[in-house]
Length: 118
Length: 108
Image 1 (cartoon, rainbow over the protein chains, first blue to last red):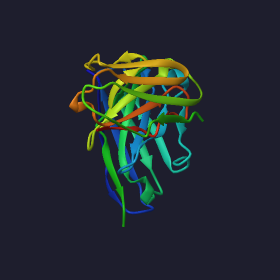
Image 2 (image 1 turned 45 degrees about the horizontal axis):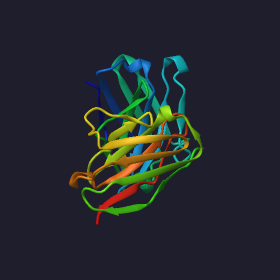
Image 3 (image 1 turned 180 degrees about the vertical axis):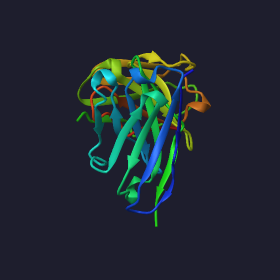
Image 4 (image 1 turned 120 degrees about the vertical axis):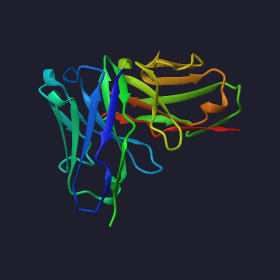
């Protein structure tokens, strides 16, 4: 069974940093693309970025709203995906989800809440 | 960037009725990478349809997806009380990946 479990959310002040983790199980992590998606309170879903697999040279891509502030990385040996968030703004407050794409089928975690507030 | 536009923004129907939700893309989307999600308050999105027309595991057959190119449709054949929620489409092939703004399906 595919499982994705996010962790690392919490309260952080504007300008601060936070690192989210996503632990994967039930599939060959290294073979697949992984995304981060977020949802601000009362708003729609927003794609944050992507980590491609080894075959695609682990290329990362980002939404314009986070490029230069957020960094996606992965550790295939630990079956984990990470989101390093720097220079956080109040508008980054959201539930952050990781997602995996297995043979064209998306799988999502349950999310972790990040609150940016003074 | 591919922009997905969902319509209508809100759909008011009664249980037992048929619901038709639209997702239109600003440029052609590979149908293999078009998904529909259902979301209820305080819950994570639930995958309903992937590959434009394939039902996810455990999804009732009253949910169906269709379409290709720039026009995609989610149909709920006979609404059950638990189907009233917000629905999103997503293209996950070309970065930046994108979501529609959502259609709220409410009880009339």
